Image (cartoon, rainbow over all chains, first blue to last red):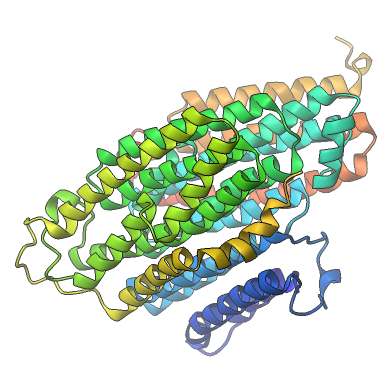
Length: 477
Length: 106
């Protein structure tokens, strides 16, 4: 079944673009996209609950590489399906032109192929190929409106992403010099018993540096707020929710969790970068006046928690990192959908010119509150549990200072989000009593569905822990 | 200078490292988007040579060939998209200088 997750969207993409009668592709693409993503989510859930795939792979021979799947893959596939579906739903409301909707659906399919392929790949080079598929789709998506800001954000992302690519390929080259091929198992073996372990070490560091850029960790984060902030609403849902996570952060989890062996210096590096990202992202978010840029900095800060947990390198920390990735995807796409709804009603993102939207947009305000509480880690929402797992894992492993610092940063998170909520919705401001109306149902239902999901993850935590996170703890070697 | 005397992988390694360094330097100093694209190309070419070298040294040319061919295809796709973006910038500002596009502050 694994190969279908790559082949079905590919075939769909070709079918949509055949020279049908006018409007046929447009009419079908939205429904087909939602149906495929629903099927993907169902398949991933099935695999997690039953421990095996729904049916055997009939088309595995069509792919030139071998797919491989484990607990982490299924969590990623589920997350990709959820975020891509909400982005598709928001795009229905955000783009009024039929053609724009069609182009968006096509590019979303390319992006989903890239992310699914990355999650299913079993070697470093295939990982790189699928990362590029996802990245290229997002360059075009950021510049979707062909405005100056979008083009600038996209070009910055392109330059940084290409530099990251060069670093990752240098890493692959060093792994080859150390005597390995590109598959995870070969690289792992080469790290342990190579004639030149220093090459394997340099390769690991170079590959990781590339992933830091792709994931937007702090010293390399310059492109991220520009790309997220300038992209159209549904695109920033997709980018912030999953694209950078399924490329950079997923790569880091895979590399540090199940490919590279324990290296104390790498652990220290990851923890330092994690703490720096948490604080730099949160402090920068406090100073923003643009709603989407603030969310982008908050994203950097939350990715910091994931990397911090990776640096700890215990089974529990790995589960916490993956769980936080899932939670982050849910609440960040919720908040970006919210920003898209507000932007569609006001025509701008400047928080200083908002204020007082509570009366006009009560449902959007409610979903924003749920999203921010989940991000700040307030029980019983999903974000609380993943942060608790990460903090517990840090404390157990003896990193008391890191645990305390991470806990203190939660207060900063709450600070900038409460300031956001006050400036946009609660406080009296420019928009008090204005004629703005609540965003349409097409904007609201993805938000409310995601809000329900983050609450459900929090309340159903024992269930989530048993089926999603227990398999992941066994990945660490 | 007798080029035939230099072993293949030395030449490959030196040229690859030079291309990487030149590309990185050019990317940092240039203020022209087309030149930034050229710089990215130089860096990718450098790493391509490095992969060939790695395949040659370890005797796995088949693997290196497969990697390099895939890499070239992907590189072309990225450069086409980059060209499209630069064209979009040019249509908006009638210029390909990166001074015009420094409105965003990271």
